[in-house]
Length: 68
Image 1: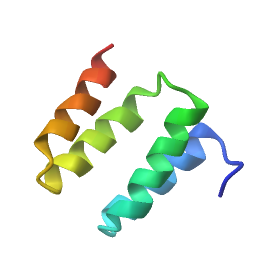
Image 2: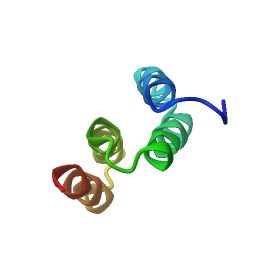
Image 3: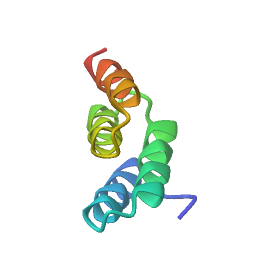
Image 4: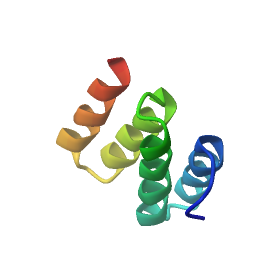
């Protein structure tokens, strides 16, 4: 899904996260951000994924980006 829209990438990221397929979720959410670097929901979702993986520094970094 390389030519999708922001919402397609975001929704795919959420779908993969719900299946705990973190690698694919992160990839999809980053693709959404590449399409629209102000997509707050994608930054927030990435923060949640990294927090669940125990990577609090990365989680905080993405949450800070969501607040900008």
